[in-house]
Image 1 (cartoon, rainbow, N blue to C red):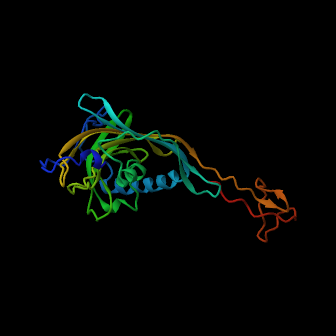
Image 2: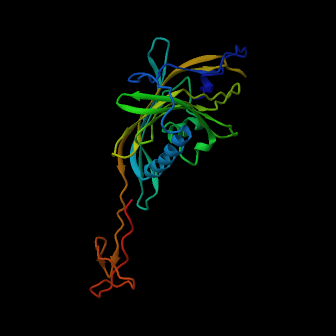
Length: 298
C-alpha cells in the first residue's frame, strides 16, 4: 500500500519512524503444540515432495474458474472504517480456452489515507494465494520447524525466506504449514517482500494469513486471506510520518473445473462421443472410416 499523495503532502519537517508492519492477526486458533523432534522423513525430502505436489496443483489451478472477492479497509483510531476498496472478479475462460478476468462488482473506492499500487494488485493476484513449486523452491531457504496439528490436520511446519532478493522481484517471507498426508500447503502466514522504503515513495504490504481448503477431494485451494495490521510510514520529502491501520480480506469461491466444449465433426455429423477404437491403418474393425479420437477434456 502506498499513501495518498494529496492527503499526505502536508509537512516539510519530517520525523522518521520505524518502517515495519505490526500484525494484529496471528494464526493461532486451533493450533496445537509444535513437536520439534526429528520427522521420519528428512526435511529436504519433505520439501522435494511437497514442491512437486505444489507444481501439480499449480497446473490444476490453471484449469479452474473461480471468484475472487477483495476488500481493503482503513480503520481510524476509534475503530471505525474510514475508507474501503472493494472488487469482485470472476476468473473464467473464453471460447478459445484462454483464461480471463471480468470485474463483476466494483463500488466507488473511498480509500483516502492509502492508495492501491501496482505491487498491491500483483500481490493480490499472485502472492496471497502462495504456491511453492519445484520451479520456485530453489529461490528460498526452508527451515524445518516441527510438526503441528491444526484443527484435525497434521502438518509439517517450515519457515520460508528468500535466498537473494533480486531488484524488481517480489518474494515471500514467513511460515507455511504442509499437510503430512497430501503434502500440500494448507496455511501460509507471511509477508510479501521487499517493501519500497524510499522516503516519499513508500509502498508497504501487511503480514497476511492465507487458508486453503480441499474443495475437490485432491487439491487444497486458497479460500480465505486475512491481514489486519498497522503500516508505519516514515515520511520524507514533504510527507509526515503516519501509522495506518488496515484490514484486508480476500475470499476465493465457486471453484469449477473448466471443461472443453469442442465438438468433432466428420462428414457433417457430430462424432465427439464416438468411442470406437481405430485399427493401426486408421480403419475400425467394421471397415468404415472413423474420425480421429477426441482430445482429452480439460
